[in-house]
Amino acid sequence: MVKRILKKITPRFLLSGYHWSWALFSALVYRFPSRRLTVIGVTGTNGKSTTTRLIAEILKEAGKKVAVASSIDFEILGETRKNKMKMTMPGRGYIQKFLREAVEKEVDVVVLEVTSEGVKQFRHKFIDFDVAVFTNLSPEHIESHGGFENYKRAKGRFFKAVSGVHVLNFDDEHFDYFSSFDAEKRYGYGFEKEPENCEVIIKGKKLISGPEGIEFEVDQELFKMSLLGKFNAYNGLAALAVADYLEVDRKTVKKALEKIVGIPGRMEKVIEEPFTVFIDYAFTPNALEKVYQDLYEKCDAKMIVVLGACGGGRDKWKRPVLGEIAAEYADTIIVTNEDPYDEDPEKIIEDVARGAGEKAVKVKDRREAIGKALRTAEKGDVVVVTGKGSESWMQLKNGKKIPWNERKVVEEELKKI
Image 1 (tube, rainbow, N blue to C red):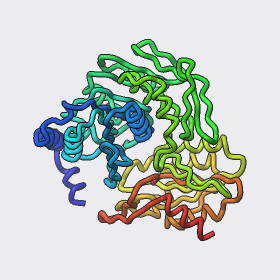
Image 2: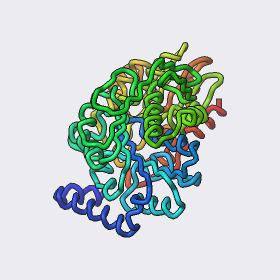
Image 3: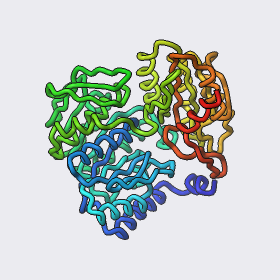
C-alpha cells in the first residue's frame, strides 16, 4: 500500500531516474556480465515464455551452454528454479546477478523474456542484447502504461535499444512499427505475408493443427511439434529464425522441436479421460481467444471453461471482454477467483460474469470452481482452466499469498468424483 502511494505522489522523472540509476548500479556491481554473453530478448504480448523455451531447447540440442529467465523458471545449464516472483522480467539487481552467474558457469547464450513493464523501469538497460524477438502485440497493461500506444512504445523502446538482429512476426498488424527501428539485420517470420523490409524471410507453409500437435513446412522441409494450437507454430518459426541467425542447422532445429513435449501451464493437457482438461496461462483477450478457438475446432462435444481476472487495478477494461470471448465458444462458463490482490474478488467475478451473460456460473473459491467444472463435464467434453498456468501462488490482499498448483488441484478434484 505504501509503495503504491509513493508511486502516485512521486514525480515521474524522479521515478525514472531511480529506476535508471538502480539499473546502472546493478550492472556495475556485477561487472556488466552481458558483455561476455550472447543475449537474446523475447518480447510481445503473448507467446514469450514458449518462444523463449523453444529457442533454449534448440540451442541445447546444438550443444550450446544455455541459461533462461522466463515467467516459468530460471535455468542455468539445466539447473532450474521456479519463478515464484509473479514477475516475468525480474528486477535489475536480480537479472544482473543471474547474468553474472551465467558468466561464471561459462554459459554461451542467455535467453530472456522482456516485458513492457520491465522496459518502463529500465530493467533492460545495461544488458547488451544481441537479438530482439517480437512475437505479437495486442492490448494489455493499459492502465499501467496509460493507453495502448504507450504500451506499444514501451515495447518499441526495447527494439530501439537493440542495434543487432531483430526477429519480427510479419503477420502481426504492428509489424511495420517494429520494423521501423534500425537493426544490423532483420529476420521476418510468418505464414501469410512476405514483407520487403527484412533481409531474411522465414516463411511457413502448409500449417496443420491437430489433437496431437502441429506441423508446418519451411523451405520444403517438414517441422513437427507436439505443442497444441496454431499460435505455437508462430513461436516455432520465431525460434527457427533465431537458430538460423546463430547458424544452427535445420536438422538440429527439427530434432529439438520434435523432442519438446510441452511447456508447463501453456496449453497443458492435464487429463485425457473420460474428458479432456487443459490448463493455460492465458489472461489477455487475444491469447484467450486463440486458446478457445483452437480447442473449439477440435471439440466434438461441450466446452466448459473456468476463468477469472487479475485484481490490483490491473486492466479492469478487459474483464467483461474476457467473459464475452468465453461466451462465444463455451457451453458453460464458471467464473472464479484468480489473483484478487487488494480488490474485492466478488466484484472482479461480477465484472467478468457480466460479459459472459447467461452462461456464467459464479463460484468464488477457485478449487470449488474447478471441481464444479469437472463434475459438469461428460465423456468427450473439453474443460479449459485459464489464468494461472504453472504459477505457484494466488495473490490476496495485504500482500498475502497462498500456495497454488493448478495441475495438482485438477488432479485432486478429479479423484473426488
